[in-house]
Length: 333
Image (tube, rainbow, N blue to C red; front, side):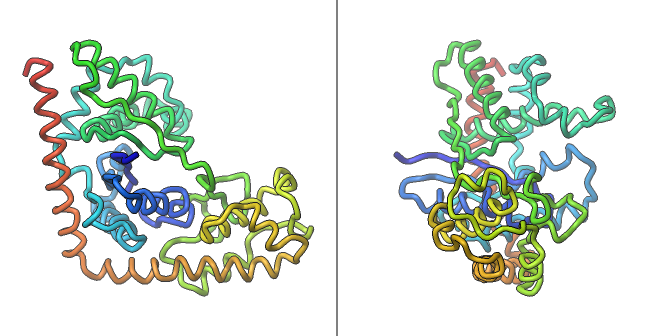
């Protein structure tokens, strides 16, 4: 069955292997499935819920777009744009914010995590961020949204808002209630230094992650130094429950090889880690090196990246503006 898919990535800069395996690789696969319509957004409005340096933000928007393109997202097949170029997102967020209930937002655990102990100092934008995410999705009548564990609650909120709007204004099915697309395998790639923590650009150690712009030598060095344990490679999947670092490295290998983890375990069962790490490093380099080179090449041509975003925004705006105009009629504007 064909799907209409919407997803966004924050332009935080320095995207890494976890972003690629956990999201972008899946975006490419969804794009290439026959009949799917895909809309991929660089969500720069979301980014400013935290203070941003304007010059850095602009560069990060381009870098995220370059990463999309270098990874195989095709602007001829998918719509690629940045959120701030389509005014309907902000307008829709306000209208839907008047439909949402404060009690729903108070239950959002991600705000509590990001705001920290002193939530009184957090921006209002960080608090109402899930409503903007709802507008992002509902303006395009998206049928499916790829989500990780940390965004499932936000998607549930978008479903609640859609259903309440339809009920309040007696317009059954006007706002499409989206379904989650949950990546079953390898959705969370963990730190190379600690298999219990998610790979993150905020980790102070650069050895904890493989950046998509790393050189071959940097990748080889990071894989070589990645944490393991003193045992041989496992022979059964059940052993991974107590070996998080080993599971993480096998997950990276399996995802990039497009095979299940059981096959990878069979391939290296009982072998030394040095043998496995050599194969892992070669696999990561083979996959990431072309992406890294293409990102660097694309970033030399900012006009081209800007043109891709502007052309994508025109396509997105046509859909989003049509929907927001219909919403305005329904609510009496």
